Image (tube, rainbow, N blue to C red; front, top):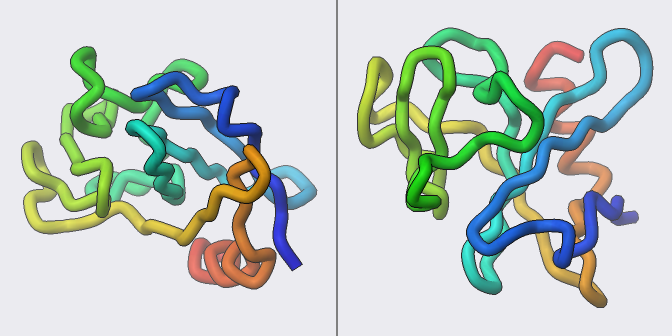
Length: 122
């Protein structure tokens, strides 16, 4: 079973969108990033401090759209794999999850969301 996260046309190029999955007081915070026809999914959690990367909705990228940026500590991560290339956590990575494009929608396997949720302690 797959879960639709968003329509591809909801994402700027380059761009990102914040999403949540699950019920209750602490749903899983996620985001997806688009560059061209490639879309990548990540858990919205900084590997350095453990908090969400963005301070404003959908603001995950540097001004030039080349890297993901933690708004709190300024760490920068590659879009293609989430590897930290600048800042307080060099070599650490964002927790990525596999997404696919199906009929104009970004989708993820529900089992993948359940795995992320368990790993995040939800």
